[in-house]
Length: 169
Image 1 (cartoon, one colour):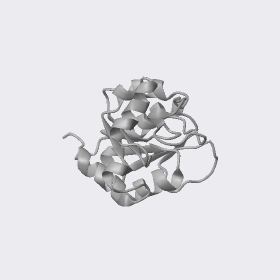
Image 2: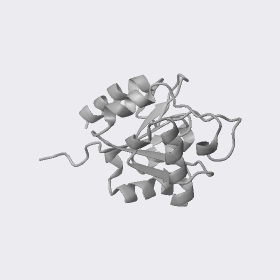
Image 3: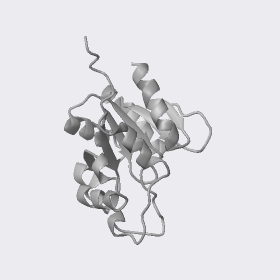
């Protein structure tokens, strides 16, 4: 019998998880004078492409999904993302649990079938975990993080950790 709780979707935060969030710029990232990815994200997305539903979830209030996709296109990674969820369109913001519940509803997946990957412990990890998602916290800070299933220091570690999460199911 097939395990219905297998990981099916990887949900990435946007700013400082996928693309660098330059504090000196304002407005939609698609219109910023300079954009760049987080080191290792393109290689990571390439590994997961076709194996998982790859989504992006953001609080970026200045951007809807089409503007987020335009920013991703500027660094040639837009095609990796099947779904883009924004607080602007969902009507909720991280860390509201409704933000994550709305995403699960739209994906028609259970929480255990999804992994949230983000760099903001309170916004990306805690609420996602409260909803039941598996969580991977991207942080250079060493410490104990009760709500994170896994803590990684760089995107280079993500593939190994997803494999381990999958094997533990």
